[in-house]
Image (tube, rainbow, N blue to C red):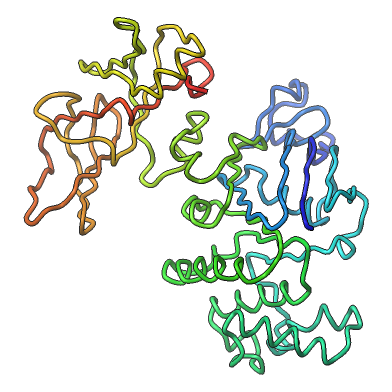
Length: 394
C-alpha cells in the first residue's frame, strides 16, 4: 500500500524586515494582513505559500497538481518529499505520520525539472547510486537497473555520460534512477518543462506506459493543463496557495467549480460574457447581448435544487461550443488562425476578446474583418456568480 493523506497542510515562509529599509510589500507601518505579493499573501506570521491543503491520495493513484506559477504546487510536493518543513497540518504515508521523518526514510523518490544527474557518472552509475548507498547486493542492483532501463528504452545508453544524451534521454535516466528503488510514492516536479513540444508529447506517452508497468503512487506537478488532463486520474487545481477544485479531468472540464478553473482548464480558454440569469415560465434562462437561451435540463435541476434567484451573472462558453448563426451575439473577427481541420477565430465582442473554433471544410471563407453572429445551446452555458465567482450550479 502507498496511500498518501494531507490534512490541513499549511506552509508559511517567515519574513524578516531589515531595519530602516522599506518593505518589499509596502510601508513598514502597513497592516501585514493587507499586504499582498503577486500570488502569495503576507500575514503576521509570514508569506503563506500553501493554505489549508486537504487531499486523500489512494494507493497507485496518479494525482496531478496544476496551477499557474506561484500557486504553491511545487511547495506542496516538496513538503511531501521532506525537502520543505510543514508549518502546520499532518502528512501521512501508509497511515504513518511522517512530518518529522527524514526524506531518506519516507520511501519516496523524486524526479526534478532539471534532471539533477551526476555529470561524471555513467547512466548505469547514476541509476545505481541510491541502491549502492543502501548497500544493496551488486547482483540485485544490476537486475533493477537493467529492468528499469528496459522499461524506459535506455539500455543502449547505460555506458554513456549525461552530456552525451538528449534532453528526453536525460529525463528518462532521471525517472529510471527514481524507479529502481521501488518507492512507495514517485514525485515528479514539472519533469517535461525543459523539453520541446514533440518530446513532451512523447514523454507524456512514456509516463502513461510507465504508470501501467510499476506499482507505485504518482504525484505530478505541472503548470501545463494539457499534461494534467492527459496524465491524471484526478487533478488538483490550485491558485494562491488554495485548492480550487479536485476531480477527474473530465469533471473539472465539464463542471468547473469557479471562474478561475473555467478559464484555466481548456485550450483555448473559455469565453466569458456579461449576462442575466432569468426565470421564465418556471425555467432558468440566460440572457446576453440580445439572445435568450434556456439552460439544459440537468442544469435546470441543479439550479432549482439550490433555489438560485434571478441575478446578474458571468456566462462562460467554450470556443468549440459557439457556432455561426444568422443572428445572435455580434462580433468582429480580428484574426483567423487556420489549424487544418478547424479555424480559430479571434474576435472582439462588446470590447472583449473572444475565440471561436469553427470547422474547416474545403475552401472555407476568410472571416478576417467581417462581422459575424454567434449562438450556443443551453448545455454549453456555465453560469458564475458575479459576487464570489463560483459556479451557481454547485
